[in-house]
Image (spheres, rainbow, N blue to C red):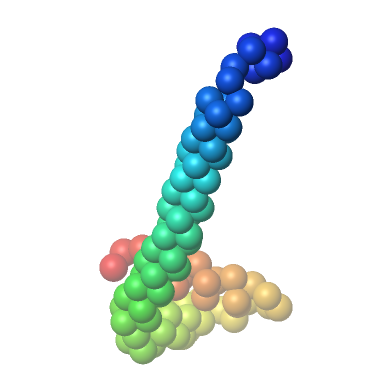
Length: 99
């Protein structure tokens, strides 16, 4: 490869090196700009989804969880220690999966 470069006229070699550098900068610049756009699009979609989730989470859902916990506590004898919290969590998860 080196003998090929030394046999080329100097002006052709300089032109090819310039063209190569232009292609390098254009290619890397295109990838860089695409990645920046991708980052901003991902952040924008995340904010949109978080806003939608806030709108869907409401007080009635929390009230249902509390009501289910109260029903569970009234229906069965009071469990000892962390068992009450586990039973309330199971009841709330079951109620949520049904709706």
